[in-house]
Length: 154
Image 1: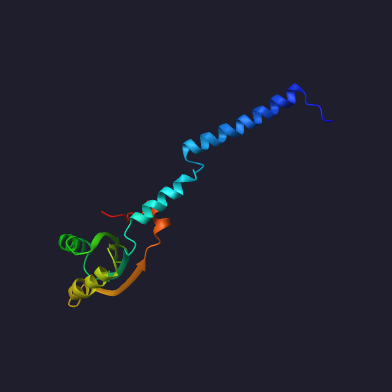
Image 2: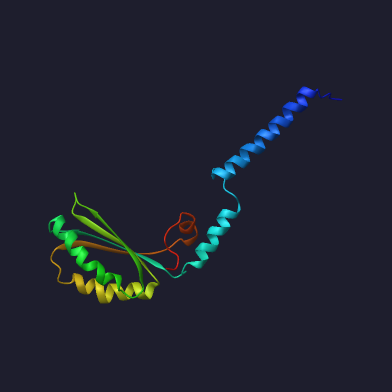
């Protein structure tokens, strides 16, 4: 039969207490995630419009970067009123004279309507852009919500 000295018991109690305090401290500082966090984020993902779509457009521009930026400032208010567009992120690589846009549309129908009736109509006679690449994506909603992606209803 194993004998426990008071010193062994105190050591075991201190070890258990230390592990407990570490877990509590980790939870409170966010190092250890609670099991509720992913569920909360799943609820947020479900609240987002399930049919939302991302549109990515990349292209090269041939004007000066300064002129290109001015053109984009003129275009932005018109895009803000496009039906079904929730948001657009504008990006630029000045060194390579390349620009891109990331759009969130309510659904595939509004995305396709934008491409057909706005984007391609506007680009048809635009001689200042070339090498246009258009890509459409579905959204992985649960991981996007977990990482605070702006896909929820506006």
